[in-house]
Image (cartoon, rainbow, N blue to C red; front, side, top):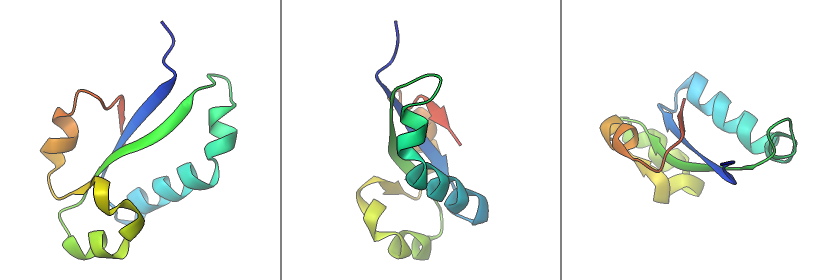
Length: 80
């Protein structure tokens, strides 16, 4: 069965994590219409640095300081 939405979890919002988030945001439409067309959804982001969370207010509701919370979430399909 084909998934209609791919839920993504991100561990860390350092240089790599912020880059991944930026690429997903800027290329969302292209990704969703690609070879495996489906919607993408950033479901949860973990970073132990609380300042990072404050700097990313657009994602405040999905931010956590617990990587384990992201890993244990059965609704997440891909973790970066």
